[in-house]
Image (cartoon, rainbow, N blue to C red; front, side, top):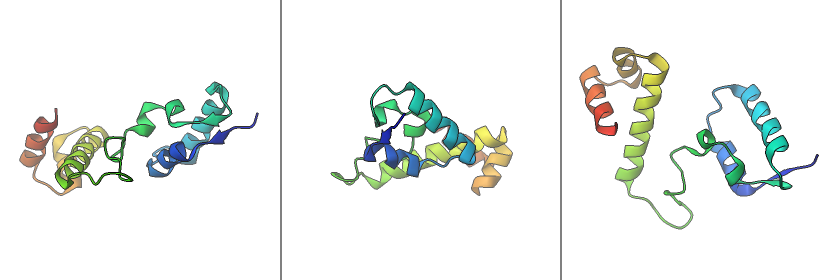
Length: 112
């Protein structure tokens, strides 16, 4: 099989952090090659976790400059939830982010 990856889809590959390293990338490419019916892998074929990053469609940086507060809020929310997911407790997550645990709890409640 020969498949191509659209430029739009490739953007998401570059922006994703790849926590599973090269194995995660390899598995995803294999899955996309097998499951994509067309000859080109597009954004629509990508799994949701790959598309969920700070530069989603609502931040169309080519045509619009988003409000700084929107972008910063999105980044803050992502960092808070990722830190809590990684450490499993408020104290360690807050320490990793360099903020007070009470601030972490307040911000986490804000985004729930």
